[in-house]
Image (tube, rainbow, N blue to C red; front, side, top):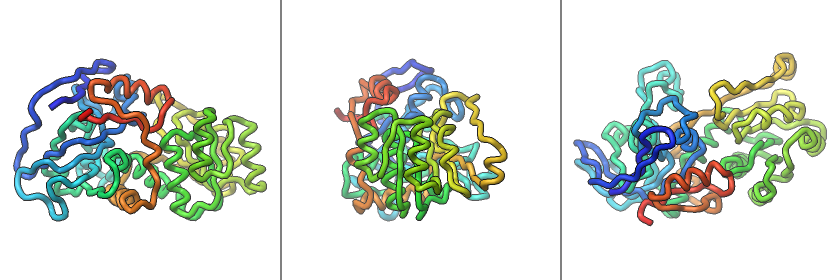
Length: 347
């Protein structure tokens, strides 16, 4: 098989060898599509170090077909089934896990980090992940649509944490693929009206096509226009879908009383600082909430939505490149010029 192995930051090697050997209880998956996340860009360039070990095979957003197993297949799975893989394997015993926050377990292992991920033609799913239910069927859609389950599930997690369901108004800051996912998912969750900001005209157009009522160039003027659009009431949820502090600061003045700010995107620098006036938080009862990865139940819920055609995602998938061009795919994601770029391992 062929796989892209990151030996160290910015040192990628394309290697060929045998498919991984299975131990009792393991599954072997044939990867059909693996998408490149902004986090993968940061792992590649070395700006993200937490939970990353080298060498590593990146790719935590992938879909595959069931190729083989070392023992009986779990109930509900057959050879040839299309699946997506929940990428996290939490420890189950730490404070985060015990309190129901297994997605932020500090002792977790994950595909694309410590476990070889989807930038490969085959992936071994260890017994523990099989038994935990990490392999989730996603029938009836393309492999790329099945691979996008993971980032949509991350958006779903962020929206639940920000109590977005049924909110009167939302502002999405950043209209890349994940920002567009937020818009579509918010409408699915009953958000009544959505505005969006992004510097790229094509992405503003995509935001409108995704269901936003208003799409503006970012900045102080946009904040005023959003406030006017909300008839002075302000927005109830601000989703920060790009890792920049200037994606937050201008829009604080258009937050409604009791608003929630979802710090959804990861920020490139560990020392990135966000400044929010303490009295504004205090007197307006604002909530600022983080959102990291997703939970398994949310992953399964989103897989069901996509399989059932309840959430349109196919047009969010952009260029697909062969494994030999993994670095080009990462660079294309970093450029922001495309939708969800991916690796098609059998091209």
